[in-house]
Amino acid sequence: MGGLPENIIDISVTLSDKTIIYPGDPKPEYDLIFSLSNGGIANVGHLSICIHHGTHVDVPYHFKNGEGKFDEMPMEHWVGKVLVADLTKAEKCVKAEDLEGLPLDRYKRILLKTRNSLDYYKRPEFTNEFIYLDKSACELFVKSGIKTVGLDYITVDPDGSEDFPAHKTLLYNNVCIIECIDLEKVEPGEYYLMCLPLKLSGTDGAPARVVLLKKDFGFEAI
Image (cartoon, rainbow, N blue to C red):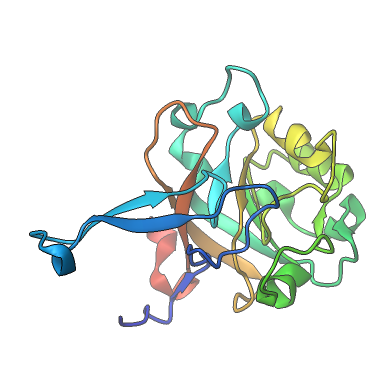
């Protein structure tokens, strides 16, 4: 399978039975309902996954009862100019103070590159040491008018959280979330985000393929 042009960066995580998943979730499973090797006219696959496996989006309905389902969210959450911010120096979590100096008022979307992309995604199993979002950072995103926040791990809240301050602060204010992106090879700066979730109805999120277009792609004209 050929690679992408240099001005397109795929930041999606490959989904398979080896993909890191949140503890307690069922593993992704793929099998064949019909197969050529067993006399079928074609290979016909069946895929069983949790919506929150691999690269995916969270919408308000994930934590709000009856409100903000996936198909109710406008496409502006998923497509448009985006800031990739270098937060690799953040320790334990991303706090509001770590975001000082970023031009948040110029963007509706932001992706946070942390040590998760450099270390924790390379580990074969889930680790509770990942960098998460502090409530103060989420409150700043809401105040700044950010519509979509992306983080480079499975969840934006710390492992074992019982009150989910990051999810609730964002989703209660209609700020959507992109989780499980890999920003290891992405330099900080401005890109054009193409996050294309499956077109589902009535769900709390959706699996997605996410790519970034570099400026030389010509996205200023889009």
